[in-house]
Amino acid sequence: MIEVNDLKKTYSIGKIEVHALRGITLKIRKGEFMAIMGPSGSGKSTLMNILGCLDRPTEGSYTLDQVHLDNLGDDELASIRNRKIGFVFQTFNLLSRNTALENVELPLLYAGFTDTKNTALKTLEDVGLAGRVNHRPNELSGGERQRVAIARAIVLNPSLILADEPTGNLDSGTGNEILKLFEWLNEKGTTVVIVTHEREIAMKCRRTVYTRDGLIQRDSAAEN
Image (cartoon, rainbow, N blue to C red):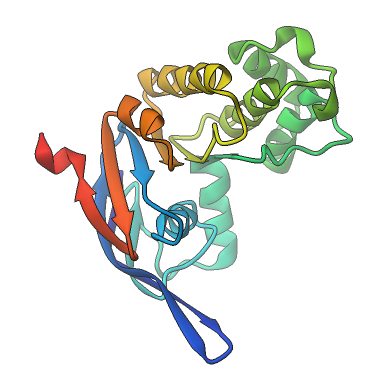
């Protein structure tokens, strides 16, 4: 599903160049459930942003579902991002004035759907929030807010979920519940990639890629 070759990303901060990625080559098969793990500054979040079409590499190539993304324009990348990729973030990124239902409806509205309410309601039911659809984020627990974020990420049935530290703001029990949701999505055929610094989370994934200093240090798939 994903193939990246010799990805490099360099940021210029004044006269200083920061090499976030130094040459990443990686393949991710459709239906994988994997973690990207590494210390702060290892390049894992930069890699996630490129995989999610939120950023572009300085060098290297990226192919998603047999589509070469390297020379696509911003509008084309945005279209691929909206149709194929769902994002889940550590800080939930919900609109505070909107209800859970309204937050989940947003991707449908942007995509031009008309029957947004029923689709959003069904998705909230799927993540166990049928009774909380009219609550705003400040009326929900951390776990419930993350469930809303997951519902928003999957409401358009993306083939790829990218989750950046999705349990980072949650206690261990709630974090395990959220991980079970990702496992459920993966069982339905969705490819799930989780960036995490938590070894316990990585151990529950079927594959773990370890990054350090902008390179892949180890890939557990190569050890099996």
